[in-house]
Image 1: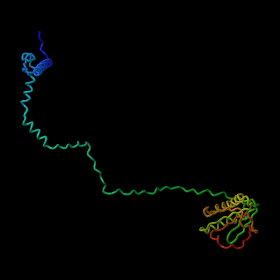
Image 2 (image 1 turned 30 degrees about the vertical axis):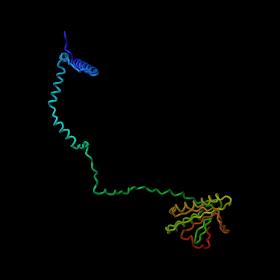
Image 3 (image 1 turned 45 degrees about the horizontal axis):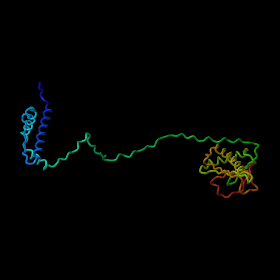
Image 4 (image 1 turned 60 degrees about the horizontal axis):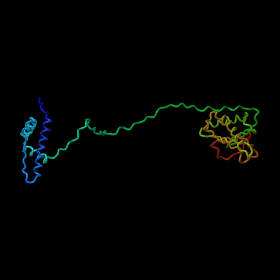
Length: 259
């Protein structure tokens, strides 16, 4: 029983026959004085079936629709026409144009914060006590008031306390004036620290009385000078000068002693 050959097998046999015929032709041509004769075995081609006929028919069918003039015209048109520029695809989101305000914004105005800070004045120093047995005296002049202390003592007796209070009342009547407290003390020139500390303690005692009598501390200037530069024979080195600012440059008159 003979089975029909597949199209692939038919094409393979057809190509083999064509190659055999071509080889025979070459052999004949290479032989001198040979007559070329190519014979086609039509019976073998008929045995291949209708595969090659089908392909030929499709090629002829395609050739029927081929128009040479139309092809040449399209070819010339492609040469003459200029290429069309392709634009990039538009983005999904449109471009946002910059907006310029018609005028600049107003300048901000910063208001001061109303913060109320309670002011607590410093507590006044402790009022010195009056020591009746304390040795000391008071000398008053037109320029200053001298408070003379006992050696190595900072105590105030009744007369010294009264002189300081009277001076405070006088300063209240002259609010534009200030007072200088120049404090001195005896001591050794090789040890200047000890007399200055003693002079400072005496000045602080007088300053405490003035503040407790209502004189602001800003009107009181304390200078602890220590050993006096020029020693006065009639005046002890242990003393404090109370000088009003408006009388500091006036000439001094003789002092009046007060016990």
